[in-house]
Amino acid sequence: MTHFICCQCGVQFAASVAAPGHCPICEDERQFVRWEGQAWTDMDALGRDHRLAWRDEHGVTGVGIEPSFAIGQRALLIEEADGCVLWDCMSLVTPEIVEAIGSRGGLKAIAISHPHFYSAMVEWSEAFGGVPVYLHAADRQWVMRPNPSIVFWEGDTQLLSNTLTLIHCGGHFEGSSMLHWAAGASGAGALLVGDSAQVTMDRSHVSFMYSYPNIVPLGPAAIRRIAAAVAPFAFDRIYGGWSDRNILAGGRQAFDRSVARYLAAID
Image (cartoon, rainbow, N blue to C red; front, side, top):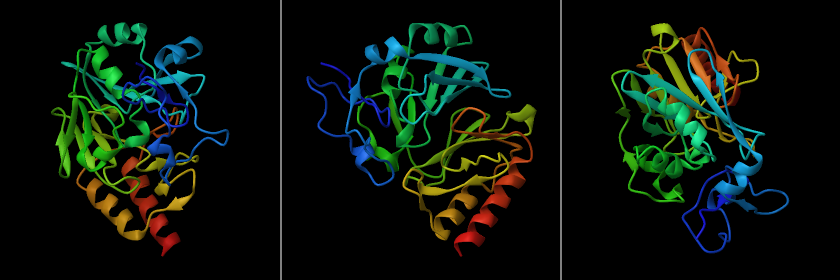
């Protein structure tokens, strides 16, 4: 039995003798099936020609797969006194990364913004003794590898610690979430957005889409819902879903400016 991994979205599936016939996440209109057709790998095969790389992301550690795999996102490791929290996830986990995170206090929780980044979340959890994986309950249907470690949280917010709060914003997916880190940016606050609000290439704005690869925008009601969800939180920095896609200062103003620009464009 093998836990197959989709080569296009990087999500790991429940164990099976043969590869699944299709990937529901990629067949959804927010994603796409590879032009060459559906393809699968597994953790061992992926580890033979890919590696996990660490890099500093201005006060937080980024963990990415090299060479790039699937959607190409990187996870972020937030270190606290009683252990680390992993924001978003990767399709590869190795003994080296387990040892490295262990040297920084170990992993106490995983939280993921939306289904495109679920990747090998259960494998990561089990590598650290079954730590909880926080997913918003509205996206329950997109879990391809169920596991008791998964915590389906509900409502508008979920506290992970005294300084970490999950925010349900919806939009890209019904359960799309962001993570507010009150201690981030030297105490000025940081917002970790995944691609619930994607940091644009000028790194001074964010944008919002129902589907990024298929270029389907969100409507004004969804944007106002996202803005309202984020409104109570102070932050000066925004961490995007990919390496170097960050807004390092003036994040609150950039977010509000981006909402106004988006609404003006679609209205």
